[in-house]
Length: 445
Image 1 (cartoon, rainbow, N blue to C red):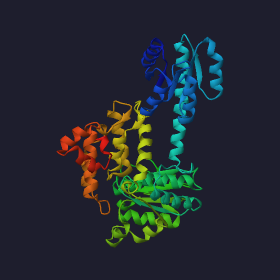
Image 2: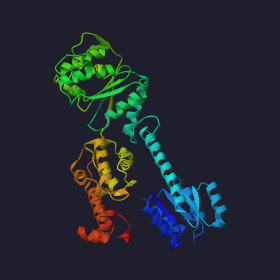
Image 3: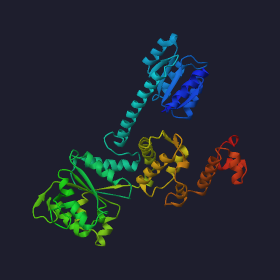
Protein backbone atom coordinates (compact mmCIF):
# COMPACT_ATOMS: atom_id res chain seq x y z
CA UNK A 1 0.00 0.00 0.00
CA UNK A 2 1.00 3.62 -0.53
CA UNK A 3 0.76 5.51 2.77
CA UNK A 4 0.80 9.30 3.22
CA UNK A 5 1.80 10.72 6.62
CA UNK A 6 0.81 14.26 7.61
CA UNK A 7 2.79 15.06 10.77
CA UNK A 8 4.54 18.35 11.61
CA UNK A 9 6.95 16.83 14.16
CA UNK A 10 10.05 15.81 12.18
CA UNK A 11 11.12 13.03 14.54
CA UNK A 12 7.68 11.40 14.62
CA UNK A 13 7.20 11.69 10.87
CA UNK A 14 10.61 10.26 10.00
CA UNK A 15 10.20 7.47 12.54
CA UNK A 16 6.89 6.45 10.98
CA UNK A 17 8.28 6.53 7.44
CA UNK A 18 11.30 4.43 8.39
CA UNK A 19 9.24 1.87 10.32
CA UNK A 20 6.60 1.50 7.61
CA UNK A 21 9.13 1.18 4.79
CA UNK A 22 10.94 -1.43 6.83
CA UNK A 23 7.69 -3.42 6.79
CA UNK A 24 7.47 -3.19 3.01
CA UNK A 25 5.04 -0.30 2.71
CA UNK A 26 5.61 2.74 0.50
CA UNK A 27 5.44 5.80 2.77
CA UNK A 28 5.82 9.53 2.20
CA UNK A 29 5.54 12.40 4.67
CA UNK A 30 4.37 16.02 4.66
CA UNK A 31 4.18 18.62 7.43
CA UNK A 32 0.61 19.91 7.11
CA UNK A 33 -2.80 19.33 5.59
CA UNK A 34 -2.36 21.61 2.59
CA UNK A 35 0.79 19.77 1.50
CA UNK A 36 -1.05 16.49 1.99
CA UNK A 37 -3.75 17.57 -0.46
CA UNK A 38 -1.09 18.64 -2.96
CA UNK A 39 0.61 15.25 -2.61
CA UNK A 40 -2.70 13.45 -3.18
CA UNK A 41 -2.91 15.15 -6.57
CA UNK A 42 0.44 13.63 -7.58
CA UNK A 43 0.09 10.03 -6.45
CA UNK A 44 -2.46 7.43 -5.47
CA UNK A 45 -2.57 6.59 -1.77
CA UNK A 46 -4.58 3.95 0.04
CA UNK A 47 -3.99 5.20 3.59
CA UNK A 48 -3.59 8.63 5.19
CA UNK A 49 -2.10 8.88 8.68
CA UNK A 50 -2.63 12.42 9.94
CA UNK A 51 -1.94 14.27 13.18
CA UNK A 52 -4.81 16.36 14.55
CA UNK A 53 -2.73 19.39 15.53
CA UNK A 54 -0.72 20.83 12.63
CA UNK A 55 0.00 24.42 11.51
CA UNK A 56 -2.26 25.85 8.84
CA UNK A 57 -4.76 23.17 7.86
CA UNK A 58 -5.06 20.73 10.78
CA UNK A 59 -5.86 17.02 10.65
CA UNK A 60 -9.60 17.37 11.13
CA UNK A 61 -9.93 19.89 8.28
CA UNK A 62 -7.81 17.59 6.13
CA UNK A 63 -9.97 14.61 7.07
CA UNK A 64 -13.17 16.45 6.14
CA UNK A 65 -11.82 17.32 2.68
CA UNK A 66 -10.48 13.79 2.19
CA UNK A 67 -13.86 12.20 2.94
CA UNK A 68 -15.42 14.34 0.22
CA UNK A 69 -12.67 14.28 -2.39
CA UNK A 70 -11.10 10.84 -1.81
CA UNK A 71 -13.80 8.73 -0.13
CA UNK A 72 -11.94 5.45 -0.82
CA UNK A 73 -8.86 6.34 1.24
CA UNK A 74 -8.54 4.96 4.78
CA UNK A 75 -7.69 7.63 7.38
CA UNK A 76 -5.92 6.94 10.68
CA UNK A 77 -5.83 9.83 13.17
CA UNK A 78 -2.73 10.57 15.27
CA UNK A 79 -3.75 11.91 18.65
CA UNK A 80 -2.31 12.85 22.01
CA UNK A 81 -3.92 12.07 25.34
CA UNK A 82 -5.86 15.31 25.37
CA UNK A 83 -7.45 14.85 21.96
CA UNK A 84 -8.57 11.22 22.11
CA UNK A 85 -12.21 12.21 22.27
CA UNK A 86 -11.75 14.34 19.15
CA UNK A 87 -10.27 11.33 17.36
CA UNK A 88 -13.22 9.18 18.46
CA UNK A 89 -15.59 11.74 16.97
CA UNK A 90 -13.63 11.57 13.72
CA UNK A 91 -14.04 7.78 13.68
CA UNK A 92 -17.78 8.24 14.05
CA UNK A 93 -17.63 10.40 10.91
CA UNK A 94 -15.76 7.79 8.92
CA UNK A 95 -12.12 7.70 10.00
CA UNK A 96 -10.62 4.21 10.07
CA UNK A 97 -8.99 4.31 13.50
CA UNK A 98 -6.61 6.31 15.67
CA UNK A 99 -3.19 5.87 17.23
CA UNK A 100 -1.85 7.71 20.26
CA UNK A 101 1.51 9.27 20.96
CA UNK A 102 3.99 7.83 21.73
CA UNK A 103 3.37 5.36 18.89
CA UNK A 104 2.91 1.65 19.44
CA UNK A 105 4.18 0.39 16.07
CA UNK A 106 2.84 -3.12 16.58
CA UNK A 107 -0.64 -1.68 17.08
CA UNK A 108 -0.33 0.49 13.96
CA UNK A 109 0.93 -2.43 11.87
CA UNK A 110 -2.06 -4.54 12.94
CA UNK A 111 -4.42 -1.75 11.88
CA UNK A 112 -2.66 -1.40 8.52
CA UNK A 113 -2.71 -5.15 7.97
CA UNK A 114 -6.48 -5.17 8.43
CA UNK A 115 -6.86 -2.31 5.95
CA UNK A 116 -4.66 -4.14 3.46
CA UNK A 117 -6.65 -7.36 3.78
CA UNK A 118 -9.94 -5.50 3.39
CA UNK A 119 -8.69 -3.58 0.36
CA UNK A 120 -7.44 -6.79 -1.20
CA UNK A 121 -10.82 -8.43 -0.73
CA UNK A 122 -12.57 -5.34 -2.06
CA UNK A 123 -10.34 -5.36 -5.15
CA UNK A 124 -11.17 -9.00 -5.78
CA UNK A 125 -14.89 -8.25 -5.50
CA UNK A 126 -14.56 -5.28 -7.83
CA UNK A 127 -12.64 -7.41 -10.31
CA UNK A 128 -15.43 -9.97 -10.24
CA UNK A 129 -17.98 -7.23 -10.79
CA UNK A 130 -15.91 -5.83 -13.64
CA UNK A 131 -15.67 -9.25 -15.24
CA UNK A 132 -19.44 -9.49 -14.88
CA UNK A 133 -19.87 -6.54 -17.24
CA UNK A 134 -21.54 -3.20 -16.66
CA UNK A 135 -24.84 -4.79 -15.71
CA UNK A 136 -23.20 -6.79 -12.91
CA UNK A 137 -24.59 -9.98 -14.44
CA UNK A 138 -22.43 -10.73 -17.48
CA UNK A 139 -18.84 -12.01 -17.00
CA UNK A 140 -17.19 -9.83 -19.62
CA UNK A 141 -15.16 -6.60 -19.47
CA UNK A 142 -16.31 -3.98 -21.93
CA UNK A 143 -17.28 -0.34 -22.30
CA UNK A 144 -17.44 0.33 -26.04
CA UNK A 145 -20.64 0.71 -28.04
CA UNK A 146 -19.56 -2.18 -30.29
CA UNK A 147 -19.29 -4.60 -27.39
CA UNK A 148 -22.56 -3.38 -25.91
CA UNK A 149 -24.24 -4.56 -29.11
CA UNK A 150 -22.50 -7.93 -28.72
CA UNK A 151 -23.62 -8.16 -25.11
CA UNK A 152 -27.18 -7.28 -26.07
CA UNK A 153 -27.13 -10.14 -28.58
CA UNK A 154 -25.71 -12.58 -26.03
CA UNK A 155 -28.23 -11.45 -23.44
CA UNK A 156 -31.04 -12.24 -25.88
CA UNK A 157 -29.66 -15.78 -26.18
CA UNK A 158 -30.04 -16.54 -22.49
CA UNK A 159 -33.56 -17.95 -22.88
CA UNK A 160 -32.63 -19.89 -26.01
CA UNK A 161 -30.87 -23.24 -26.28
CA UNK A 162 -29.86 -22.98 -29.93
CA UNK A 163 -26.42 -23.67 -31.32
CA UNK A 164 -24.23 -20.60 -31.83
CA UNK A 165 -21.30 -19.64 -34.03
CA UNK A 166 -18.92 -16.98 -32.74
CA UNK A 167 -16.77 -15.20 -35.31
CA UNK A 168 -13.92 -12.77 -34.86
CA UNK A 169 -10.18 -12.31 -35.16
CA UNK A 170 -7.72 -14.40 -33.17
CA UNK A 171 -7.43 -13.16 -29.60
CA UNK A 172 -10.59 -11.06 -29.67
CA UNK A 173 -12.33 -13.01 -26.90
CA UNK A 174 -14.38 -15.70 -28.65
CA UNK A 175 -13.65 -18.27 -25.95
CA UNK A 176 -14.73 -15.88 -23.22
CA UNK A 177 -17.92 -15.12 -25.13
CA UNK A 178 -18.65 -18.83 -25.37
CA UNK A 179 -18.29 -19.21 -21.60
CA UNK A 180 -20.57 -16.21 -21.19
CA UNK A 181 -23.30 -17.70 -23.38
CA UNK A 182 -23.15 -20.91 -21.36
CA UNK A 183 -23.07 -19.01 -18.07
CA UNK A 184 -26.30 -17.19 -18.92
CA UNK A 185 -28.13 -20.23 -20.27
CA UNK A 186 -30.37 -22.78 -18.58
CA UNK A 187 -27.37 -25.14 -18.80
CA UNK A 188 -25.22 -22.88 -16.58
CA UNK A 189 -24.96 -25.48 -13.79
CA UNK A 190 -23.98 -28.22 -16.24
CA UNK A 191 -20.57 -28.90 -17.84
CA UNK A 192 -18.86 -26.45 -20.16
CA UNK A 193 -16.11 -28.21 -22.11
CA UNK A 194 -13.96 -26.78 -24.86
CA UNK A 195 -11.57 -28.18 -27.45
CA UNK A 196 -9.38 -26.56 -30.08
CA UNK A 197 -9.97 -28.38 -33.35
CA UNK A 198 -6.75 -27.03 -34.89
CA UNK A 199 -4.20 -28.65 -32.58
CA UNK A 200 -4.95 -32.38 -33.02
CA UNK A 201 -4.64 -34.84 -35.88
CA UNK A 202 -7.86 -36.22 -37.36
CA UNK A 203 -7.52 -39.51 -35.46
CA UNK A 204 -6.84 -37.86 -32.11
CA UNK A 205 -9.58 -35.30 -32.61
CA UNK A 206 -12.07 -38.10 -33.40
CA UNK A 207 -11.04 -39.92 -30.24
CA UNK A 208 -11.31 -36.76 -28.14
CA UNK A 209 -14.75 -35.85 -29.48
CA UNK A 210 -16.42 -39.25 -29.71
CA UNK A 211 -14.35 -41.34 -27.33
CA UNK A 212 -13.24 -44.88 -28.13
CA UNK A 213 -13.70 -48.46 -27.07
CA UNK A 214 -10.92 -50.62 -25.74
CA UNK A 215 -8.86 -52.06 -28.57
CA UNK A 216 -10.30 -49.66 -31.17
CA UNK A 217 -6.75 -48.80 -32.27
CA UNK A 218 -3.17 -49.29 -31.14
CA UNK A 219 -2.79 -47.75 -27.71
CA UNK A 220 -6.51 -47.87 -26.85
CA UNK A 221 -5.97 -49.98 -23.74
CA UNK A 222 -9.20 -48.83 -22.08
CA UNK A 223 -12.60 -47.44 -22.99
CA UNK A 224 -12.65 -43.66 -23.01
CA UNK A 225 -15.60 -41.29 -23.00
CA UNK A 226 -15.43 -38.48 -25.55
CA UNK A 227 -16.03 -34.80 -24.93
CA UNK A 228 -19.46 -34.90 -26.57
CA UNK A 229 -20.51 -37.56 -24.09
CA UNK A 230 -18.95 -35.72 -21.16
CA UNK A 231 -20.80 -32.54 -22.20
CA UNK A 232 -24.22 -34.21 -21.81
CA UNK A 233 -26.79 -31.64 -20.58
CA UNK A 234 -24.13 -28.95 -20.93
CA UNK A 235 -22.22 -27.09 -23.63
CA UNK A 236 -19.40 -28.19 -25.93
CA UNK A 237 -17.28 -25.38 -27.31
CA UNK A 238 -15.59 -26.19 -30.63
CA UNK A 239 -12.87 -23.60 -31.11
CA UNK A 240 -11.34 -23.18 -34.58
CA UNK A 241 -14.13 -25.28 -36.07
CA UNK A 242 -13.00 -24.38 -39.60
CA UNK A 243 -9.86 -26.49 -39.06
CA UNK A 244 -11.85 -29.68 -38.53
CA UNK A 245 -11.23 -32.29 -41.29
CA UNK A 246 -14.24 -32.79 -43.58
CA UNK A 247 -14.60 -36.47 -42.62
CA UNK A 248 -15.06 -35.51 -38.99
CA UNK A 249 -17.44 -32.73 -40.01
CA UNK A 250 -19.81 -35.39 -41.38
CA UNK A 251 -19.68 -37.38 -38.12
CA UNK A 252 -20.22 -34.26 -36.07
CA UNK A 253 -23.18 -33.24 -38.23
CA UNK A 254 -24.88 -36.58 -37.62
CA UNK A 255 -24.28 -36.34 -33.87
CA UNK A 256 -25.83 -32.86 -33.81
CA UNK A 257 -28.83 -33.85 -35.96
CA UNK A 258 -29.61 -37.14 -34.20
CA UNK A 259 -28.37 -36.42 -30.70
CA UNK A 260 -26.55 -39.76 -30.77
CA UNK A 261 -23.27 -41.23 -31.96
CA UNK A 262 -20.91 -44.22 -31.75
CA UNK A 263 -17.59 -44.20 -30.00
CA UNK A 264 -14.60 -44.96 -32.20
CA UNK A 265 -14.64 -48.77 -32.55
CA UNK A 266 -17.98 -48.98 -30.79
CA UNK A 267 -21.30 -50.57 -31.74
CA UNK A 268 -23.52 -49.05 -29.07
CA UNK A 269 -25.40 -45.80 -29.76
CA UNK A 270 -24.81 -43.17 -27.13
CA UNK A 271 -27.56 -40.58 -26.75
CA UNK A 272 -26.71 -37.05 -25.62
CA UNK A 273 -28.30 -33.64 -25.13
CA UNK A 274 -25.58 -31.10 -25.90
CA UNK A 275 -25.56 -27.47 -26.92
CA UNK A 276 -22.81 -26.71 -29.44
CA UNK A 277 -20.98 -23.40 -29.67
CA UNK A 278 -18.44 -23.09 -32.48
CA UNK A 279 -15.87 -20.37 -33.06
CA UNK A 280 -13.73 -19.40 -36.01
CA UNK A 281 -11.58 -16.56 -37.32
CA UNK A 282 -12.25 -17.63 -40.93
CA UNK A 283 -14.99 -16.66 -43.34
CA UNK A 284 -16.96 -19.92 -43.29
CA UNK A 285 -18.97 -19.05 -46.40
CA UNK A 286 -15.74 -18.74 -48.37
CA UNK A 287 -14.63 -22.16 -47.09
CA UNK A 288 -18.00 -23.61 -48.12
CA UNK A 289 -17.54 -22.42 -51.71
CA UNK A 290 -14.10 -24.07 -51.84
CA UNK A 291 -15.40 -27.32 -50.40
CA UNK A 292 -13.41 -27.08 -47.14
CA UNK A 293 -16.45 -26.80 -44.90
CA UNK A 294 -19.81 -28.52 -45.09
CA UNK A 295 -22.69 -26.19 -45.73
CA UNK A 296 -25.17 -28.38 -43.84
CA UNK A 297 -22.92 -28.40 -40.75
CA UNK A 298 -22.60 -24.63 -40.98
CA UNK A 299 -26.36 -24.16 -40.86
CA UNK A 300 -26.66 -26.60 -37.94
CA UNK A 301 -24.10 -24.68 -35.94
CA UNK A 302 -24.99 -21.20 -37.11
CA UNK A 303 -28.54 -20.91 -35.82
CA UNK A 304 -27.32 -17.67 -34.26
CA UNK A 305 -24.08 -15.84 -35.04
CA UNK A 306 -22.19 -13.54 -32.70
CA UNK A 307 -19.37 -11.46 -34.14
CA UNK A 308 -16.70 -10.09 -31.79
CA UNK A 309 -15.15 -6.92 -33.27
CA UNK A 310 -11.36 -6.56 -33.14
CA UNK A 311 -9.91 -4.44 -30.36
CA UNK A 312 -8.83 -1.71 -32.80
CA UNK A 313 -12.54 -1.09 -33.50
CA UNK A 314 -13.45 -0.78 -29.82
CA UNK A 315 -10.84 1.55 -28.37
CA UNK A 316 -13.03 2.36 -25.36
CA UNK A 317 -12.38 -1.18 -24.09
CA UNK A 318 -8.61 -0.76 -23.95
CA UNK A 319 -8.43 1.18 -20.67
CA UNK A 320 -10.76 -1.04 -18.59
CA UNK A 321 -9.14 -4.19 -20.00
CA UNK A 322 -5.63 -2.86 -19.37
CA UNK A 323 -6.59 -1.91 -15.82
CA UNK A 324 -8.06 -5.35 -15.20
CA UNK A 325 -4.92 -7.08 -16.50
CA UNK A 326 -2.75 -4.70 -14.44
CA UNK A 327 -4.42 -5.77 -11.18
CA UNK A 328 -4.38 -9.41 -12.26
CA UNK A 329 -0.65 -9.55 -12.92
CA UNK A 330 0.38 -7.17 -10.15
CA UNK A 331 -1.22 -9.65 -7.75
CA UNK A 332 0.31 -12.64 -9.54
CA UNK A 333 3.86 -11.25 -9.42
CA UNK A 334 3.37 -9.53 -6.05
CA UNK A 335 4.27 -6.11 -7.47
CA UNK A 336 3.08 -2.81 -5.96
CA UNK A 337 1.96 -1.40 -9.32
CA UNK A 338 -1.35 0.40 -9.13
CA UNK A 339 -1.63 2.50 -12.28
CA UNK A 340 -0.72 3.02 -15.92
CA UNK A 341 0.90 6.35 -16.73
CA UNK A 342 -0.88 8.78 -19.06
CA UNK A 343 1.84 8.47 -21.67
CA UNK A 344 1.73 4.67 -21.59
CA UNK A 345 -2.06 4.74 -21.88
CA UNK A 346 -1.86 7.09 -24.87
CA UNK A 347 0.54 4.67 -26.52
CA UNK A 348 -1.86 1.78 -25.92
CA UNK A 349 -4.82 3.79 -27.17
CA UNK A 350 -3.06 4.67 -30.42
CA UNK A 351 -1.93 1.10 -31.15
CA UNK A 352 -3.99 -1.14 -33.44
CA UNK A 353 -3.48 -4.46 -31.57
CA UNK A 354 -3.27 -7.00 -34.40
CA UNK A 355 -3.26 -9.65 -31.65
CA UNK A 356 -6.36 -8.13 -30.04
CA UNK A 357 -7.21 -8.63 -26.34
CA UNK A 358 -4.72 -11.47 -26.00
CA UNK A 359 -1.92 -9.17 -27.17
CA UNK A 360 -3.01 -6.42 -24.78
CA UNK A 361 -2.91 -8.90 -21.89
CA UNK A 362 0.59 -10.03 -22.86
CA UNK A 363 1.77 -6.40 -23.10
CA UNK A 364 0.44 -5.55 -19.64
CA UNK A 365 1.91 -8.71 -18.12
CA UNK A 366 5.29 -7.81 -19.63
CA UNK A 367 4.98 -4.27 -18.26
CA UNK A 368 4.22 -5.53 -14.75
CA UNK A 369 7.21 -7.88 -14.85
CA UNK A 370 9.80 -5.28 -15.88
CA UNK A 371 8.38 -2.13 -14.24
CA UNK A 372 10.23 -0.94 -11.12
CA UNK A 373 7.94 1.96 -10.12
CA UNK A 374 4.35 2.00 -8.89
CA UNK A 375 2.94 2.66 -12.38
CA UNK A 376 3.49 1.10 -15.79
CA UNK A 377 5.37 3.67 -17.87
CA UNK A 378 5.80 3.97 -21.63
CA UNK A 379 9.33 2.63 -21.19
CA UNK A 380 7.92 -0.66 -19.94
CA UNK A 381 5.90 -1.19 -23.12
CA UNK A 382 7.38 -2.96 -26.16
CA UNK A 383 9.27 -0.52 -28.38
CA UNK A 384 7.46 -1.90 -31.42
CA UNK A 385 4.21 -0.28 -30.29
CA UNK A 386 5.50 3.17 -31.26
CA UNK A 387 6.47 1.94 -34.74
CA UNK A 388 3.13 0.24 -35.31
CA UNK A 389 1.33 3.45 -34.46
CA UNK A 390 2.65 4.77 -37.78
CA UNK A 391 2.78 1.57 -39.82
CA UNK A 392 -0.64 0.08 -39.12
CA UNK A 393 -2.74 2.52 -41.15
CA UNK A 394 -6.32 1.66 -42.01
CA UNK A 395 -8.89 3.47 -44.20
CA UNK A 396 -10.86 6.01 -42.23
CA UNK A 397 -8.14 6.39 -39.59
CA UNK A 398 -5.52 8.38 -41.49
CA UNK A 399 -4.30 11.44 -39.60
CA UNK A 400 -3.99 14.79 -41.29
CA UNK A 401 -0.51 16.28 -41.61
CA UNK A 402 -1.52 18.87 -39.01
CA UNK A 403 -2.62 16.17 -36.55
CA UNK A 404 0.49 14.08 -37.17
CA UNK A 405 2.79 17.09 -36.73
CA UNK A 406 1.10 18.14 -33.51
CA UNK A 407 1.25 14.60 -32.12
CA UNK A 408 4.95 14.25 -32.98
CA UNK A 409 5.70 17.63 -31.44
CA UNK A 410 3.93 16.63 -28.23
CA UNK A 411 6.00 13.43 -28.06
CA UNK A 412 9.23 15.42 -28.39
CA UNK A 413 8.09 17.69 -25.56
CA UNK A 414 7.40 14.63 -23.40
CA UNK A 415 10.88 13.29 -24.22
CA UNK A 416 12.32 16.51 -22.77
CA UNK A 417 10.11 16.20 -19.65
CA UNK A 418 7.90 19.13 -20.67
CA UNK A 419 10.71 21.59 -21.40
CA UNK A 420 9.36 23.31 -24.51
CA UNK A 421 12.44 25.41 -25.11
CA UNK A 422 14.61 22.31 -25.42
CA UNK A 423 11.93 20.67 -27.55
CA UNK A 424 11.83 23.65 -29.91
CA UNK A 425 15.62 23.55 -30.27
CA UNK A 426 15.54 19.81 -30.99
CA UNK A 427 12.84 20.32 -33.63
CA UNK A 428 14.81 23.14 -35.21
CA UNK A 429 12.02 25.70 -34.82
CA UNK A 430 11.45 28.82 -32.74
CA UNK A 431 9.43 28.79 -29.54
CA UNK A 432 6.79 30.88 -31.30
CA UNK A 433 6.51 28.25 -34.06
CA UNK A 434 6.19 25.58 -31.39
CA UNK A 435 3.38 27.56 -29.81
CA UNK A 436 1.60 27.80 -33.14
CA UNK A 437 1.91 24.05 -33.68
CA UNK A 438 0.40 23.30 -30.30
CA UNK A 439 -2.07 26.20 -30.43
CA UNK A 440 -1.40 26.96 -26.80
CA UNK A 441 -0.91 30.16 -24.85
CA UNK A 442 2.43 31.65 -25.86
CA UNK A 443 3.22 32.45 -22.22
CA UNK A 444 3.44 28.74 -21.51
CA UNK A 445 6.28 28.25 -24.01
